[in-house]
Image (cartoon, rainbow, N blue to C red):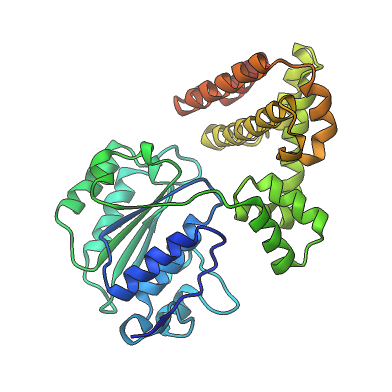
Length: 348
């Protein structure tokens, strides 16, 4: 049979080659783990791989997914549409599990219900596919439930776990899975994509490609969402300004960056995003201190980076970077997010 693949993944060509070869040869693993940073294409690839598994063309040949059969129409994959999570509510052989926005972990009862659904016979005599987003947020009970299922695998039932770090998953799960690694995409590749796909000016394409730091979906998000872009840049300029501020002024910046309406896990995830973006600033300052301003991520702040980079010691930057990593561990341990951020800014 002849198959054609046109999956919208930028970079990471080795992933598409491996998965498409698996489909052509009929060598499908019972579990896959897609690993890599956010906004790099893991979910998009999982969506199209799932669509290909459920597409009627898998039995006859042709484009995978085709975009026109009953399964593709249900999951909204076509020439002018994209895969949405709503597919889980309309296609009987696809099941999605993800953490609730107000929870730290995926609830074990949700895991068990997810597994029960996959253990039922296929409604359309096809594969049954279960996708777990943010798989690292499964707790021990959830992983144990999943492990029991993997020990007695059912034919044509496929699990796809999506995670940032392979270290966050139990070795007993990893040993039973095909691990697919996603790597940051070259800045030049993202730059060319933004110009060709969105007809963006060269200056803006360069700006967003640099800011994305190897994550194509993030570059598109910067381009399409002005409020998202403005909030991100406010975090960057806020940290740079702190080098010339006293303690009270730094705490005022923290107040401005945090949204009082967000509490609990939402607040914790916001602070994580702030700290992660600040680590990029530290990298930029180190690059400037070593005489490589042409490589900085935050080109819009190059003037401030140059001014601060000659005044701040590398030892101080590295110490702050260590404190940032420590702060992320505090957030995972449920320490108050605002206190974590205030403690961090005192060390800059």
